[in-house]
Image (spheres, rainbow, N blue to C red):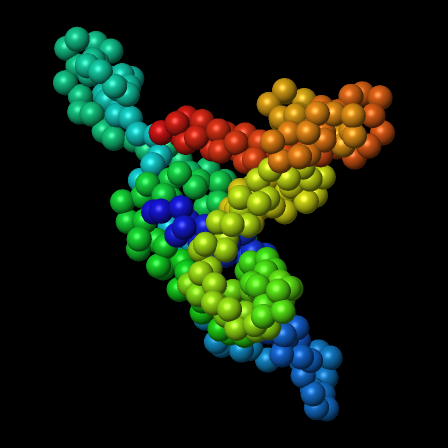
Amino acid sequence: MCSACWSRLQRQLARTDDILEDLELTGAGRDKIRGAPTGRISHSSSSPMPVRPHVVRAADRLRNALSTWVRDLWETHAIRWQDCDTCDARWLSGDKRHTTPDCGGSWVEKVAELGHVDHTSAGLARWVLRHQNWVKTHPAADELHADLLDAYADVLRVIDRPDDRLYLGICSAELENGELCEVDLFARQGQTAIRCRGCDSAWNVHERREYLTAAVDHQYLPSNLVIAAVTRRAHHLTQSMLRNYRARGRLTAYVHDESATPDEHGHQVRPIRDDDDQVALYRVSEVVDVLTTKYRRTSREAS
């Protein structure tokens, strides 16, 4: 599975809690998007709420799809070994040897138990997110990708949730009067090209995303903004992770200092000191490097 496909799947997995909340409201007739139901309530408070079969079907399909692929991912990548059915010998690699030389027992393959998993849709989605490398290298990754996205699409159709819009920055096309267009650009999921609603300039979505990524990389941002910046690039980051990376010396925190020598982009910053009372800043590119190194190491350990 390529990084672009994983990013698309990851976005849906990461917002499972919000999607399920909207689905629950739809099932109870209290849709946040379509508005509250109208009309007189004629049943008593003890009467059961009406069941909406299409809501139940969509919820069940999503949970079943997630559960199926969690089991499949585990069975594909779990640790395996062989035990003798007669003696207590165990084989992991190398030459097979019985505990007793004259043992005539057979070798039986064993697979590590999956262990405790939260079998709600949200819990299963979190499990899949934690096993990115397993998903990307699964022999049927294309089928997994299509099956899960179809299940999420069913749920989104039921709750009539609009697609997320991707912000692509300010248009900045030069107008006839020499000024630059200041209209914000947005793209919906799957769009490859857009037109500015202000000046009608055409833009390639991929090129705009690359431009914004490059522009953000050299910025020094406070923790909440740097988390938002790397999350949009399909990385997982929390405040505690930032603190841990900083405490272990893997990440440097900075502060603005007008006496500091400007860097290659003109930013006057220096490493933060214990006596500084300014908000700690982090360079986006350095955070991305730490996270990328972390994922590479995790992938090697998992394999």
